[in-house]
Length: 104
Image (cartoon, rainbow, N blue to C red):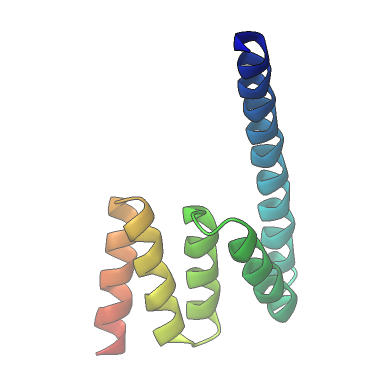
């Protein structure tokens, strides 16, 4: 029984490592879409990514920046607030304050 439990834990660790690599590659592809100004494609991929990884701070931060870039301030603020809730990052706070100031 203990051996099976240890095997299960090792399998779980391996799965998390693979999932982390997949997430990293998905984010890299989305960033490339943004560089190429494929904003609709990037938003669709970010929606899919965040449905798959609902605690991905980087995904929320990236989507918030994209929403801001295309003028969807309310959506940008919602997503950056979610990113901050997941990880209290000072840079995210500063970005949110800047956007709030710009919005008046």
